[in-house]
Amino acid sequence: MTNKKQPPAKTATEAPAGRPENPFLDAAFYGRMRDYTERDAAFSKELKSINDRGAGKASPDAREAPSLQVLRAVVKKGLSLDDILARIVRGVESGLWEPWLAPYGIELQGVNYAKSGARNARLALDLSLGSKATAAFSNAGIANWRSLCAEDCAQVQVHKPTEKTPAKAYAIFHLDAAEK
Image (cartoon, rainbow, N blue to C red; front, side):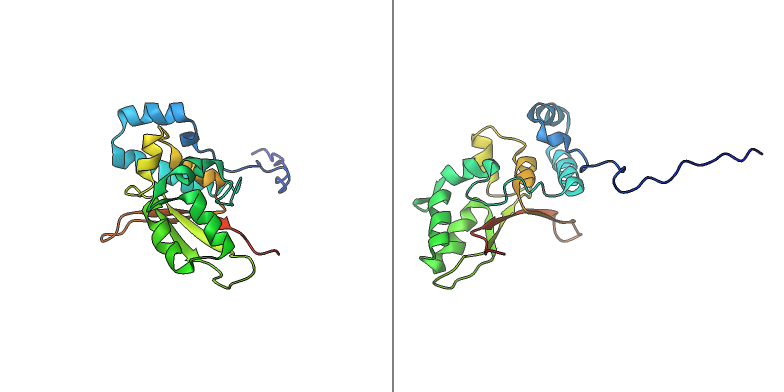
């Protein structure tokens, strides 16, 4: 039996850099996959890729995230999402923020309601199969919107399905974050 010398273990700097790939970021791939895959299965595969890759943190401020541009232009209850986000930052009409955000598929998970100072808001965009945001993105022809939002957001939360509840996923964006 020969005694082969093993190569030295890779250090952290030599380890492959980066996050796992998400093929769903490619709109053409997404379209081809949807041609041959059922809706629920396609959603499950995309959600797994999003979960494996994690948040991209490319543009976590909801006012600037390119992936939310379509939503920011949509008018619900007489206001665009852009207007709503501006009002949240200004700190006016605080009792209306949550009901205003709900039609966009956005939940207000935390916010500073004080009259002055940064809002430090956490906005959770529902990425689930039945998300209210789906219609706006579908109308704009953006089928892979979940993956695009996950690349911009600060955090991805995925809750696995149980016998009683379907899979839920959220892209967490910040708004008017407090200075560190």
